[in-house]
Amino acid sequence: MSTEAVSPRPPLWEINSRVVVFAAVGAALYAVLGLISFTIPGTQLVDVRPAFALVMFFGIRFGPIVGLFTGLVGNIVIDTIKGYGTFTYWHWSVSNALAGLLAAVLFALLASRIKRQAWRLIVVGIIAELALALGFLFSITDMWLQGSAFETWLATAYGPLLVSNTLVALILTPALDAVWEPIAARVGR
Image 1 (tube, one colour):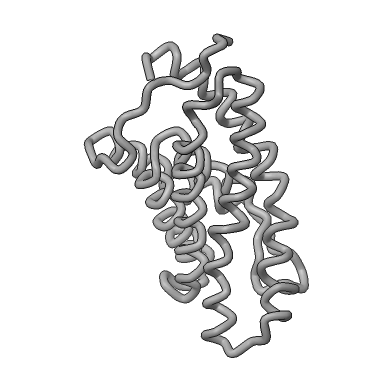
Image 2 (tube, helix red, strand yellow; image 1 turned 30 degrees about the vertical axis):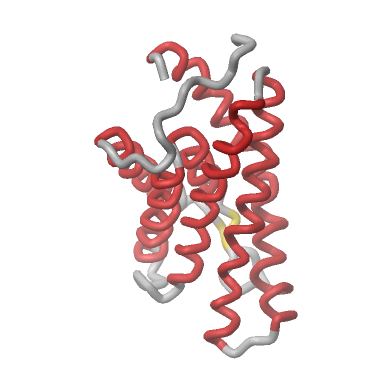
């Protein structure tokens, strides 16, 4: 690996054909691979979904618009295919989108300071965990709409989600990034 692990990035909020293609690919991959999951018993349909790492990876590597689209559209498709309904759990789809967006923005703020591959992978893991925790705070709207107590949301939705997806954020997101780095270097990205 090179000592310079960060390649130049296009403007953060630019929408071009590359962004559209990566957003579509990210959403499609997340939708298909997201079906490989299982629901944690005793929760409000909280799934352990290893494919969630794709949302944050696509955000970090290809920008906030791609991360947002990957999380939002991918989760809507997963919910629809699993029979939950297209917009029944819209707040969880928005939470997925926010996690992808936040991962991209947080990484963009720190990318210029990362000089070595090992540090990059550590930072990617930390950013993924932080984006997960912050993005899914939006799911509190589920509690408000159902009239549930805060403690119920924390114990049966948000808490189990954080616990189950911590390994996804800390291990799989940096692993995807490590696999992508040599590919990006070869294609000039």
